Length: 332
Ligand code: SD4
Image (cartoon, rainbow, N blue to C red; front, top):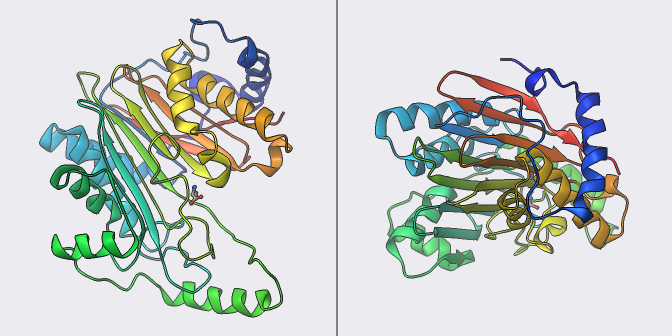
């Protein structure tokens, strides 16, 4: 696994570039020459949030090789993360809400025909990404939530699963004791998988899955299952996914903004950074308080990411390579 910056640009260089991007955001002309273009574009290509996305990407690549379906590839890549209790806040081992219940959010999108399915506040089901796909393929609807989503999943044959691990129960008990006097509870933690794939012909599919903000109020839905917020794809452009504090993404249709910026000619990393700057300008709080991070890929396989969290990185996988790469750290 290589963690070298794209095309030899250092993290510092990325940060410097992000300052340039800052100037570009408000002035963005209709078409701009792509910057940071030193990694040759290649398809098929899979990109995802965080280091743990690399294994998901590699699973996606394998499934794509076997099925030639970028939608199957994205779904299966995300399932890998959902069933692994050791990472982040996705599926099994997800962080519970304030009542100690794991409530999952997920969505899936397929570029051709702009198809989409989504579930939110779904409890007791291991693979919300697959339930979202069933919503997309088997119903006339786009989004199901809460008990309705759970009943649908059960009817579709998804088994009921206890998603709480002992470790999470222990941490929740500790949190509960500490929070006894605090109102409203302080939420914690974020580690969502958002994964976007481009097939050989430039078709785009994407998915996003999370248990959301830890210790959230019961019923709270974040950006991850909201089309255009935690995920967006447009088959003529590419796709984007988000991770971080959903409240600071969903008020702005963050991923839609990223994709639109790419449509207007920005390189994916520029588009992510420009979106963050637009959000920050509207929100008014300092960048460091926002916790918003985006990954994006265009239909040719150019990819990039940017975030306000210095720890944010992303994974990119093609037929030839699979890397964890630094995101542009947007500081102001
Ligand atoms: C949420 N955006 O529910 C999600 C959490 C997340 O990485 O992304 N964690 O707000």
